[in-house]
Length: 242
Image 1 (cartoon, rainbow, N blue to C red):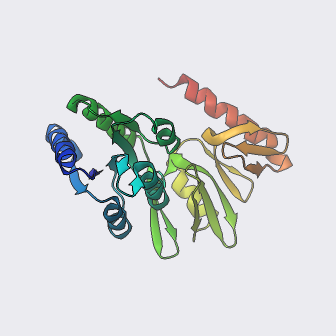
Image 2: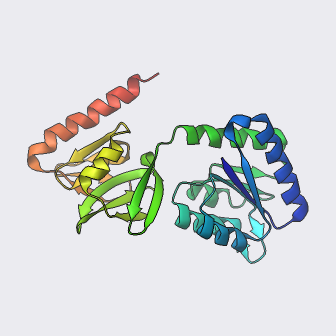
Image 3: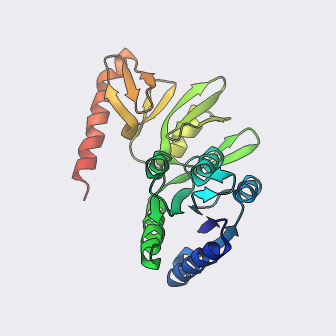
């Protein structure tokens, strides 16, 4: 697990790094590596060149840029692949932070135990993820399957829509994508052009599935009863899971 820390105050940076090092020592099974940055622009540049971390610990107030703006840039680079924990002296940005899908928001001063609890939650959340590689041109993106809303076959490829708002244009067939998604429960084919994450269906309309991002997926007439039944069967299974 790669953890990146960014705080412009050197003493705070050292303190956070020390607490994370203690956490890493207590959890050798995670094989934690730690990267530290006092300049958020240097951190973003490093992510662009060397890939994103699993977890980013970010201060809010930094010279020239807010931590929430840094988090938006991380989301642009990584989608939802990086779990973000804010460490700050103010509660004023909590709403904005969680709108960016932050994992946690710790106000200073916080205890090492509180930070460890936040890292535990992030680590546990990552264990439940199912990452797959998606090839887009010359780039390969690692995505969490459960962050996919739906996939649509278009223009000799597949457009994959993520919860973060990002769209990946994959040079794959819908069959290729379906085979990748077969690892996860809750994905169904809708006609010849769509694969849908049932967790992200807001409503079943007469002719469409309304997704949680406000977009609609058309359902062919012959498949409407089958899609409806698959939807209810999925949630029956979810409800009986221990």
